Length: 388
Image 1 (cartoon, one colour):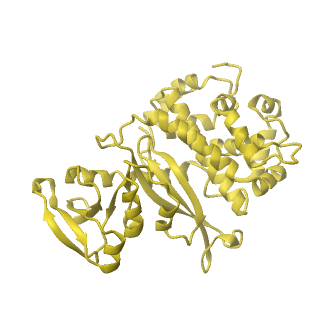
Image 2 (cartoon, rainbow, N blue to C red):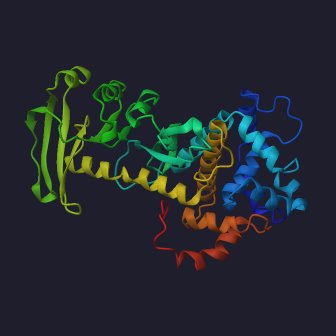
Image 3 (tube, rainbow, N blue to C red):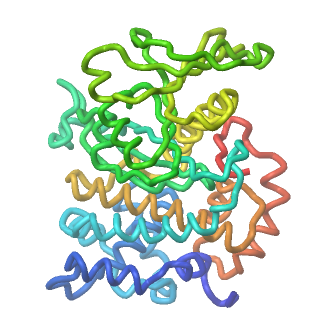
């Protein structure tokens, strides 16, 4: 890589710019825009994510302090907090949502052969949501409770590489299960969900689409046992049953048979009951699959710790969605770079190295090799880590 380029420029070289401009053109993002293009907006917001900026003024001051480098970093306009704020408020957030999907597709190809804890060739997704709290006086459109505002980020995580493949941003009042109405099932894939998604009508739609699911049973769940499969109690399995639903409405919504697996959890000293439409895999593997669902919880905690999706640079719905989608784009872009450069360090360490070297003219590989030994050997044990 060219040693004369800044680290920020080297990172942005991995962006598929032709695809980005197609997204801008699709939503007329630069209609009547003379200065400060959508690319300038994306670069400013990406810089804020990579260097952990806290405000629009913070972004402006940092970038203006390096005026002589901005052109070579890809900026073609003067950076102003007012201009950036106006762009975040008015330019269609779908530009960055579509672009994030393009980066996600690239990342999934790179990580498609990565292991995720279970020896299985099928594509496995974990579905969950996280609530991002907001100030009600600043975000009145996102009213969640009487004195609280919030948005929800519903995420479908591909466990091979922990890449988010589907994201839906809604207000905090939308129930988790509603996201199944907009999710397009992938035939043959396995979806891991908690009890919040236990809706038999929607689960049957997944089943009819040729997809599989593993979820938890509720305590008041009523069923009829059809057959009990043999189990090995040494594996802490309690039962493996083929069942039918007996409640009138549940049986009407899901008229076919289900599989019920109960396993004892030694750590929490309780029995866990799983429901699935998978009959071909061992019961122990069903329990192991559901355990992998925890990766989506770690993903949420990781991005809240390492990306700017808690403090927002604008108060409109468009500004909030723009910032979240650009944050996801930066996360996926760094994951792509890590894979393409074949880096063995964690994503957390990689981000920390990048954050303090944005204006340096050192090749990324040299930065990593210089800092790897010092940082990785004394990593904070309390820091969540998705990529080992």
